[in-house]
Structures are given as structure tokens and as C-alpha cells.
Length: 68
Image (tube, rainbow, N blue to C red; front, side):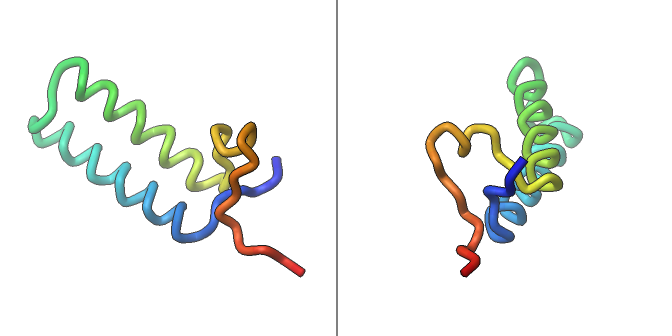
């Protein structure tokens, strides 16, 4: 997989995942929405670690800086 996420995108996803996890475990968001947030947090963490977003690939989006 070719990397298509820059550092700003990765950091943003990681922070959002942390917020989603805190919201779930503090009981602020419960039920089906809590489960949705946990799944989304897991996806954000996974994609931030591998620097690849599968939704970016079909659209040709890349937030990585260009290398000359």
C-alpha cells in the first residue's frame, strides 16, 4: 500500500479517535451511537498507524507532501 496520509491528517485522526473513546467510556455517548464511535475510533487509529486511507485511494486523494 502506498502511503496517502500526511502527518497532519494522521495526528487529527488520532486525536479524534481519542476523543471518541473518552466520550464512550465516560458514558457521554451510549447505545448504538457509542458503538459506532468506537468502531470509527478503531478505524481512525488503524489508518493513522499505517498512513493509508482506503477511502482516499479511489478518489486519488493524498495528503502526503510531494517528493521530488
